[in-house]
Image (cartoon, rainbow, N blue to C red):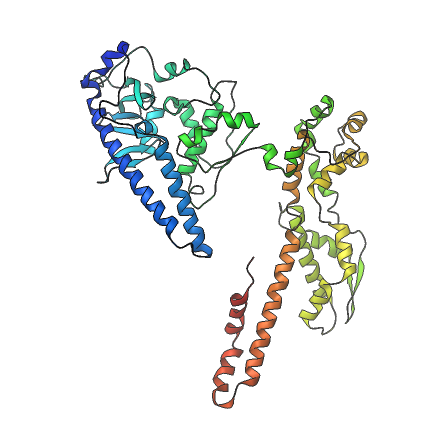
Length: 518
């Protein structure tokens, strides 16, 4: 914790004019209140965290809630301990309200509920970053601090109204932004939150519907904007944050992630996952660099990634001929039109492997509707679902595909690659072929990622079928239990018990009582 025994300001002699008590006395008093509140907040959070850790773990949702609360308290405590008074970035004074509003990396209130710092992402703080002389956003003045080793080594005032000075602003020929340009570079991105410019802040605070692309040359602040936008969305978007979704920040390589590693924690966000593309693909850890520059060039083209779609569609063709499915009761004809109808069952956009289950269910419905006779529905469905010939036909028409096998085939079966990427020249097709189809390189990772997105989980269908079978078996078992109870019910109490057990609500509720957990 920073001490205020002397002053929060440590201005060099050349800035002695800025040390005038008339300019900084209000700040000194406010910083004293911040220091006291920080000390109390850290003590309170430490106590709550200790209590949570000592409490019984519980089971199920209770245990998960406890772990989430410990994670939240730990993150907040770490953020407060990471900074002292330098949580404060600066202050703004409204044209219609002379009371300064202090902007911080985090929001902070005192024990009486008085607001000491507003979170930089809050709407109240937006003018601190977005105000310009063309659009002052209701400000009379703005002050930004530069912190060095926990004390203010400089500050800059900007005035937006003719009477904004009022003897309380120190103006010089520098701005916080210009001064930041002279800072020396280091192995990690320096703290730039206090110098975010209005055009950058507009991107940071842009709406979160759809994709947002930020384009610019080197050194224009793209990384700064991306990182600050990440923190802003975690604060403002109701779909993210505590006990909701999260944010994945993907960088080009590990040195880049190391360079920006301190930025998000300095903005109060420690739960963001940072990864490279290698980390997102299972084969990434062992992938090597593509040694042939021509092959690397071909694989770097976005056009070639488009080959994944026809590569998958090749395995999604309904049989051109019908078949006869034999059952214990009768033979059922499954025509080519029936196959085509079943292949239309999955919703558009359903991944290939996950769509297979919808096709299978529709096939069974078609066959059961086509059956002539009085075969019990449950027995007929069970017989059809175990029909080896039908399963074999489906496996040929719509097989379960692994992404690695699909991409490996592109690099080892020339005819397959030519079909999926007809724009490639014969020479390019030859260059892309290799002896070991799955000797993965970094250039292969985008293809594997695209294939997995298009194919989906190869185990999804099997898991769903096993779960459905388990639920059906449990329902059948409970139905037998109820039938046994009805059979042995005695005369004295049997009438009421039989009436209750035969009721449909009781039988339907048993399925929810006994449904297996995933």
